[in-house]
Image (tube, helix red, strand yellow):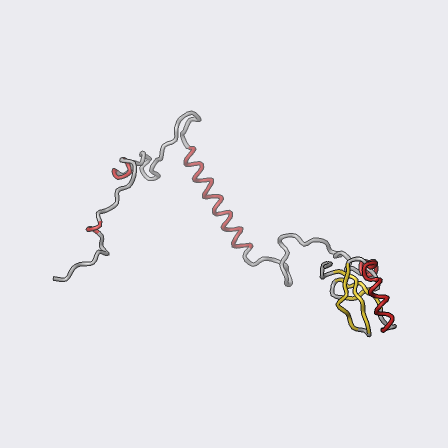
Length: 155
């Protein structure tokens, strides 16, 4: 079975028949038999939802390429073609970038290239200490009896 979107078909009495083929030569014997009973029968090329005299005719009437070309990523429908969120996004981008610069400068401040980096408290300038529960290798879970969501039994 040929693809359904482009094929040769036989029209008899102005109506399409069930006979379809990708090649015109495949339909010629059937077309001749139908012409004996229906002299007005004709073979047409079906493509893009229309009947054409030939595949070349369909190709010649194809839509021409767009004159204005490809739209860039900033194009928006409407009058001024601007994204309303653009100003807010630009401000957030600038704010985030300045914060990253400050954070990077803070990390790099006073360190020699071969000196290992250690976490430093921003307010006191002292090294941060790990909690005692983290020193053992993993955090300790609280005992289930100390859970505030534990049900109390009625006496």
